Length: 418
Image 1 (tube, rainbow, N blue to C red):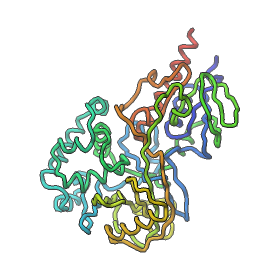
Image 2 (image 1 turned 60 degrees about the vertical axis):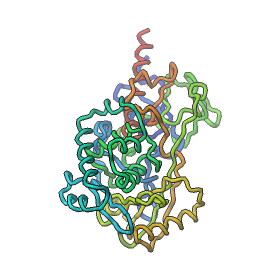
Image 3 (image 1 turned 120 degrees about the horizontal axis):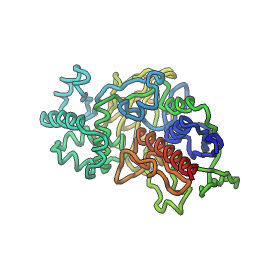
Image 4 (image 1 turned 60 degrees about the horizontal axis):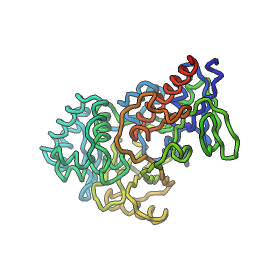
């Protein structure tokens, strides 16, 4: 059978599904992507609201991600870089802590920030050096422990763990106790050390939009819900049955193939609230961290400290909450506004929009860096992709999409030989 005659379906037009389609196209196939929403991106989306760019949750691209370097055109994305550091709110004042090796002007603010002690600063430099010499593959073969235990074992003080590591990595892992695997900590820490955190000028959705624009032989079916997947068949919510030679599930597979996936995926949630402000409490593009453990707010960021395509009339502030709170929308908004004034000394905010993201990141154990193509195969004709197959990162989403597509190609090639 000619390659273009194969009916290969990809369920989910997130980053993983788009990469899978690209790899299939590169090898002569013409896949079909089925997407439940009206556009590509999955969890990586940006809305326009009152002329502001509102990402679905505070997200960044780490430029050191190997898969991102392979599949994305950074120049075309017009990436805007964060400064390598953070503005930490502690005891009613703002302290700057950053990487003086990246920006020498951060040396004295970091040394005299009052965050941690001199021993902590040397331990950070030692950790940087150690991880630069460690391969990504090696990181994901180490024994796992919690990130909190990892930091304690390295001898970091309680002060720097509470003031910096907890709020910074809680915003990445979306859980405040740092129970996430030490493999993920080392991976993310290494990526921050070897590149930059960045955002496309048009918002985070510019990433999947670029991936979609690269596709020339892929057909999209938007606003189409899949009910279940079986060997050689996909059943849609409206009862339509689609014939499929191979199917890549690039979304949560547990509800689509319960006979193959016995355990339902667990997810971490978060909430992001956007406000319009007359001025910035943090002038430069630093992430703002709230170091008080009693605070509901975890981190803040003024998106207009970076260049954006749509900038509105004032300043745009995002506030991220990762703690479970049980508050209704209005009470949460009021609590956040109160904390902004209490911890950051800022007020006069206009509430814009709230994103409650119930499935922000999958809860995973035994984290992996990558899979062999054959390891993505759930059954003879069904393959799995998505960050939940490896680890919670954009890099993992891309690598899993690549591996699943190569698994399909390998299986079809073997079938043709028989």
